Image (cartoon, rainbow, N blue to C red; front, side, top):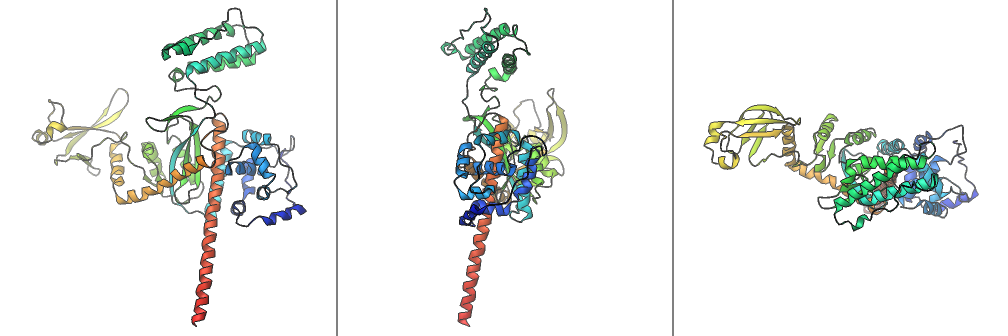
Length: 513
């Protein structure tokens, strides 16, 4: 049950006068209306029934302090019990008791839903726009990786853990294992051939599962049945044996991802959309390590548009050079500053140029395409074939390099169905405007470093996608508030310096007079 909070402060609150007015928490509180944000969290409580709940505003602010200063559940309660600024920010009296640290975990799991945290991020950005704190017209998007809170195991080890868990739950619910069961788990480490080791462990696990499955029921042996079903689900995934699926029973959502061609990691990916000038995060989403950049681009863009920003430009790296993303940008009337990806656009522009008005390709020797044919292969892939003038190709000095087939007379240029659209983006990329504007994207790299190095986003605190998503979004909220305080402090410093300069200038004028 959600009860009304008491706002009355007692005599000890006079101690709060010691907190400087420019303290980061005071600046944050002056800029953001948290009571409006609390309404979003309050929807997950029952207002009339159940045990009295802790004030959601208090719990939310504790979670923000935790991510702002990178503290554990126990440490944030300890710090908030000692520091006046924390108590003031939480809205409590200095002599009041704080909730048990275990309630913070329950608050994150049961009260903070993905949609609530997304709405809080949007609401904070919206308030900043309405108050004139930010007025960005550009946004950047990128992903950053987070290591799982466990180690990456080979399939053989995962299967060993599965059979151990099945045996343990069976003994707990039934007693001794069936007589035909074999408790001697194969020593897979002694098998030199890795593929053979996987098959040996897989065969052993499946055989033991069959023996136990015949002696248990869902109603009488729920834990054993759950372990059996989980093992079946993992084994049925073809990616598991190929080491591209589950790599840990502790965190079954974590996956192996790639930071580069030669470097990988085990964990999760967070995709972040952020304003380029003020560096405020407008939306983010979390996927496993194998998440493909840009998969939820439209969701993030829609969320950003709700904040009321007057957007004009979108920045991203080559991973975002995809038709689906480019179309979404155009659909919203924005300009994309995304470098061309060689994987999507494979035209050698030193040899060929395109005229979109006439739909013609021109080669470096002046020959041009004279007709076009649409082609669709058995797999559904569509391309266009452009045919060049045969006679000009026949006597062209570049013919040996251009036309590889001895039987061919005229050049046939086969391009992807989206190549013509990508050509325009390729030309824009060569302009000085693009090169200068694209420098704005670098601000997102700084933000990724800040999130990981100072606010704990380099490693997951819990297990599973839900826990990782909550951690990332709370961190984004905390970092946004920190940045808002920085922007306001800079503006205040400028105003003070300007006032001092004006006073000195006025005094000098009076002396001259």
